[in-house]
Length: 127
Image (cartoon, rainbow, N blue to C red; front, side, top):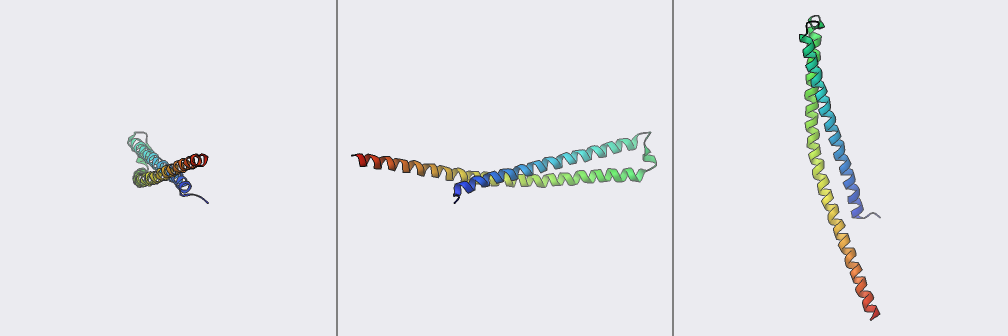
């Protein structure tokens, strides 16, 4: 049979893993947004270059730039959503950790009380 303390300890670990997952996803989205922004910037620079093929295929360049900008915005929005999930996971983790620490302190206190009572009982038995 698992105790409440054991269940809370496992739940703390799961909450920490969930928070780490959201932090990783957040970083991934930010990285993808930065890459899309760099791609759009590079395409714009090539578009303006004299040796560019943009003059032959302007629609293609505009479409690729628009797609890169759209990817950047989508990734930034996903990163914002993950940031909200990180905040929620952090709050839940903190709440579960507090509950775990409270239960652990209570168990320690009860064990200490039992030990004192046993010592008192032993002393009375020896008298």
